[in-house]
Amino acid sequence: MTSKVSTVIRRLCAGVALEHAWLAGALATLSVGLSACSGPPAGASSGPQSTETADEFVARINRDLTALDLEGNAAEWVQNTYITPDTEMLRAKANDRYLAYLSRAAEESKRYDGQQLSPETARAIQLLRVNVSAPAPSDPAKRAEMTQLMARLSAMYGEGKYCPPGKGPEACQNLDQLSKTLAESRDYDTLVEAWKGWHDVGAQMREPYRRFAELANEGARELGFKDLGVMWRARYDMSPEEFDAVAEKLWQQVKPLYDELHCHTRAQLAKKYGEDKVPAGKPIPAHLLGNMWAQQWNNIYDDLLKPYPNASIESANRALKAQKWDAVRMTRSAESFYTSIGFPQLPESFWRLSMLVRPRDREVVCHASAWDMDPSRHDVRIKMCMNPTEEDLFTVYHELGHVYYYLHYSDLPRMFRDGAHDGFHEAIGDTVNLSVTPGYLAQIGLISPVKPSKEAVINQQMKLALDKIAFLPFGRLIDQWRWRVFSGEITPEHYNAAWWELRKRYQGVAPPVPRTEADFDPGAKYHIPDNTPYTRYFLSYILQFQFHKALCDAAGYKGPLHECSVFGNKDAGRRFSEMLALGASQPWQDTLEKLTGRREMDASAIIEYFQPLMAWLKEQNKGRQCGWE
Image 1 (cartoon, rainbow, N blue to C red):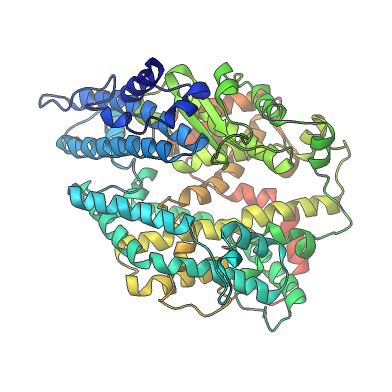
Image 2 (cartoon, helix red, strand yellow):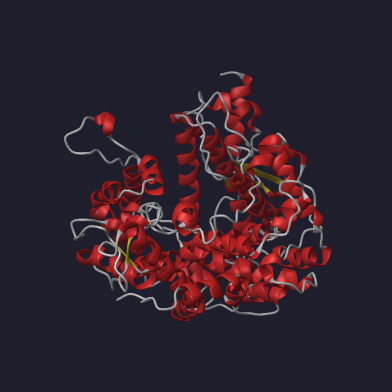
């Protein structure tokens, strides 16, 4: 074994973060190396001590998880940026060690139940117990079964294809191809076929998902929770009942705007496809909204929903290409926004170690993501396959929101290095993107400095609403369904009926063809087979507008909220920084108050932001039969 290879194995076994400049090539030959690791990671203790106080226990957990993070982050980064069977195995091994440790630590923490603990220690133990989206049962056989089920469900989704009957394998289509059809075709029957083709993929997941839910519930009960849904909601510093009431109140605040958008959209679809296919007063057929799950409707904006076809919204796409903006310049632009409000420059290692474009020599995961590799060294990165487009420009501004959150809370103990709750992390970059207004884009030379007309403003608001507002009921209902599955309220023989009941109630959409319990349409959405909690996205869409209004107030801005940009305002940046630095160290209500002056999540800023569109929609909907059965 070469000295360099030996070094890789030693460093992986030690949990040391690896620089991927030479690591990627070496790892392809190291699949057996990590199996040599034994014992706790470097810097970790050997195990629990019978005389250990709760404070000492938490200190040990923070040390151990920090060491495990280094190993896991390195393995996951390399697997994402250099895909081979070997790197997949290394990631699985590291994840196995991490999950096994979390299970043991959560079990150990029970010995402090009923003791008088400091608020910091009690919070750390609470976060430890809700740190996994799918806790495995302690029984080794059941744990192995659950791990296999999770891998199987993920593979079923990833390998899913629609193969038209009577045609050869070359006619099969994957999700990307079917989604393209949903986005671009305007032929009713073609859309039905593509929609049904993908949703039928979920049928095979029904039984594996039922068993997975059973095992994950068992793991949650071993940690002291009634079921997995109760465990997920425990992360929000309130009882499940209180949280459900808060989430429903937020939805009711934005529902009037959604209802107006739904009514107008249905009327426009009826003009296109006929009132026999899109009748008034009924749910909209789900396949007509340009998205496989009808969760965002912006793909039908240009040809069906643009309010004023002759009032164009100037895009940055032309200037990005003409001025030869590359991935580095786009990222520098995003950095310059954050530094303009007083945030620090990104570390040198960010530029050296991030993946900003698709490599030409290997397979990678191009899905944009931000990475907190090693807080002690401020090793933060992003992974993207950037192109000079406005969409990718907004994406990199969003990803740097995660990165700057990492940097702000990097000095906190390991258990507190996270968002105040999971909705906060997703909201940071989107809050900044609300300040990437036409005025800001003109300021940095990407569009002309001409104030948009009233018609262009309505166009712009409609385009954004088809992304943000159309999403809200979908973001609300995904976990509504899962929590009721986990609690037993929705039984396996009613999985699909309950799914469509929620989709009709919240979204006002219906399947284009009859569905039965032979189907499993929840499985057609990635986050169900992957077991990724989804309420975070609903909350982030609420919080980003609440944050935006608070920052505009801090900046002393007095005009319409949709025109506000806090670019260059240090007062707004200072308020933002103070909130970000708190991480997860205290209940989110305290952290929210730091920025907004309020302890409740509130959706009124959304209504204020979209006031021009709301007035326009109400005018358009006069005389129409709005709502649905």
